[in-house]
Length: 321
Ligand code: VTB
Image (cartoon, rainbow, N blue to C red):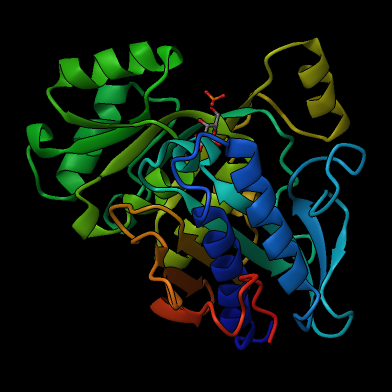
């Protein structure tokens, strides 16, 4: 895969982030999502690749664009799997909260798990704790392992988890272990990535979120040398059947290589609202500022790209040149 694709992906997540940031705090999550999706889709047409969406906005009959199976790119260049989350954190943008991202990952064709759109139980850590965690182990064992790996007391470890009633048990266990918690309203892709960056102060992610986002987070963590493990959690007979049809084993722990094979993969995320890792889009009148993380698994290169985008030259905020 061409490494020059990295910068192309930045242009895509920047466009999505800027378009959806206009909806911050306006209480309209669908509008924010549509704006991100439309902007992202329009830039894809200019990217030199032969991409197929494996993780997207839904099945063909339910999503007008970026649906699973949709072909993206100019029709020339490398054959890749594409995983998109044009707006990870629609509620976050609607409320003007923290850590909404426009996210995109690509990998060699066939290398991303085609995860069904259902819940996944997850555990994620940064590089120091790789190989030390086990999603099937008690919470306290994982916290102890991370504390040891990072040379901290368990009281110093910070776990992050989405604030939901379904997580009461895990939250109780983290508290009983004496560790600290950063509850997040939404956005466990950011939560997972944050475990790999010291400046975020987050050591480990626990809890149940979307399976597609688990695969996207896995690409990010592969670039960062971190780790995520996941287990599919079908909620009803229909979802259980979908797992069977898709060859998904609900008893299996999906490890890094199951989620994303090999290391020919690129990850890009642009902040929509401010977060620990990335600032959100700043609308300054004449221009917009964006903050993007772009990484390549093969080289392990991690870049932070600051963009300044003229809103006078491109008033519709769709950057396709
Ligand atoms: C959300 C969202 C996450 O999973 O929590 C969602 O914020 C599923 O949880 O980032 P709910 O059904 O309780 O909202 C994610 O989208 C992704 O994993």
